Length: 91
Image (cartoon, rainbow, N blue to C red):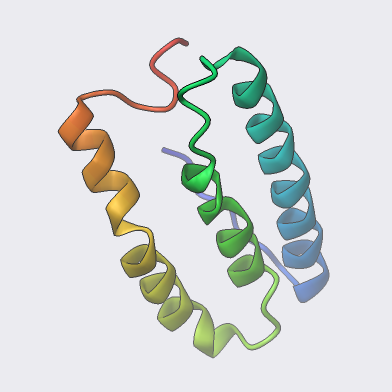
């Protein structure tokens, strides 16, 4: 897994905005290719939440916010383990 270093708030802001756009594109793609009965979009709600963390100006609060987001979306990870499938299993 790679690591990204942002040198400024502007770089973080641009990355967060890009993450939101690309997350929305992924959501649309999976809506198109998934069966009608499997239209659960809640798994994609974590993407904008993470993007908001990246866009934060106060870097001292980022680690706190990451832990809050991780706790809030823990159910997604548990759901994937229970069903033994991942979002990107088709790659």
